[in-house]
Length: 219
Ligand SMILES: Cc1cc2c(cc1C)N(C[C@H](O)[C@H](O)[C@H](O)COP(=O)(O)O)c1[nH]c(=O)[nH]c(=O)c1N2
Picture 1: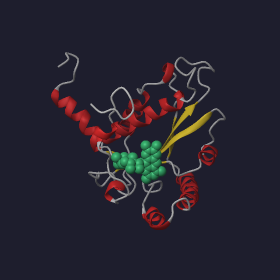
Picture 2: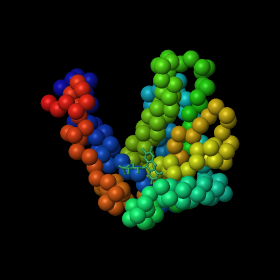
Picture 3: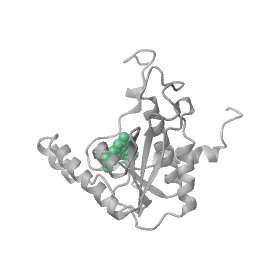
Picture 4: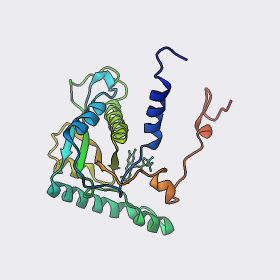
């Protein structure tokens, strides 16, 4: 055991946050989120790793019901287009899934990525220009985990045209949406992903995903 490891209780708490984090769509409560709690989850997001320490994210707090209604309309359009891509029984199942809580959650948070922050040349992004996008995704995950320990649910809504979303939120040219998150207190957290409970997909066996040295090589 490393001298730098957390205590057993602290390790258990971190792993508990990871495995009990859920994507929330239907269990939102309207209760407001205290400023101090919001600050803590945004601070967690802001402590995410980022390529070249670029910190390319911004956090747009979307409370206005009028804007959220427009975001919901953009979701509805994308959702109808998405349904058309599935066929047969899968289409019917897809249509029956609840895949957002835009109006139920009291707060939307759009995590963005400013692709031009700190100029065109960034340490670590020279060969792989998408690394700034990945950095903002790291911020999303930190926020999601911090929200879970605060008892707040988060639901990621990606069934939406990001160009339409950027326009609705008045994002500058160099800033793109990474995640539109519905955030709020919840009636309960599911034990398993809702898509697993719905029979859409099951959790893959981890051992089938671990390869040694070369693809497909098992120990
Ligand atoms: C990049 C990305 C995008 C989306 C999601 C996740 C991620 C990582 N998820 C949530 C997703 O369905 C969920 O994470 C998995 O089903 C696993 O469930 P838990 O997150 O463990 O509850 C998601 N959920 C949803 O209801 N509508 C959506 O548009 C999306 N989009």
